[in-house]
Image (tube, rainbow, N blue to C red):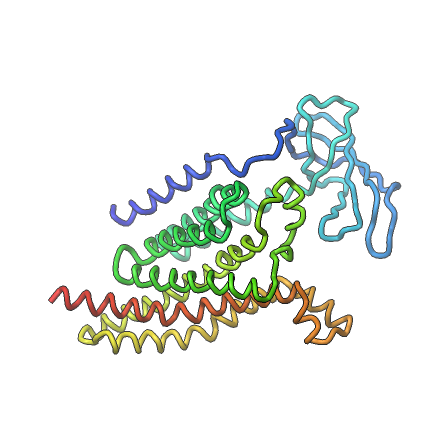
Length: 366
């Protein structure tokens, strides 16, 4: 019963967030999106510009109720945004409130959620089958994290709250929930939480400092300019960038914090007579072994996101000094180094806090 109670509470929190209103829409025009089968395509109006196409692809789509409408798919010669339909595809189309037979619908994109839900269901089954009860707790924490970001973090930032502060508080809540589910309400969980939050706090401070001295304005994030011109001109993109750094590195920080706290607990369990100094040294040694691989993991995770950018610089023969000084690469450098700083710092923080908790707990018990 005790094991099921935290999961039940978290499930209720997930249900509450699920029914809570999401980010507000700028205008409610009554439009809705529905699935439709593409039954006919006409590519005669498309023009080939080098490697990309430009123009309007004309479609005939059949709605679930059997009605057939004409639809338009605009191609803007932007490979990252353009899509092209074939007969038999399932499209997501925009349907007006009172659509007439001669209306031309807008084909927004391919319908991907069918396979997406199947993929997610397979992930849930695998996680629970392999992890058992721990896997089920991890699944609920995963869902809670997604809902917290979408239903709390994003609406608050759009409403004008400081993005870095909201991200920090969100990370603190998620860290507390995840640590409690994984470790329970004990010294290991407390040590992992405290060490992780000290590392996150240091990361936030470093992000603000280096982001400003290196003149990273946050506009390098995808769709940042589109967000500003969508009616949110008051948003501080630099502050959003700082918060994004903290949010992106928090998972690795939590992982490292739990590894070191669990290691210190195991050392204490094997040798209960060890004091603060010995436990702290053991935590430091565990941290040294883990930090080397974790920082490399973070570097590879971030570099994978801008691999094509580096390939462009290489193809153009740009000197490393030139592209390292560019705005885009400088932003990624700040993100990578700040996240790595946080990882390196969380190791000694967690080792010291965990050693203090375990050694003090025994003294109080005696």
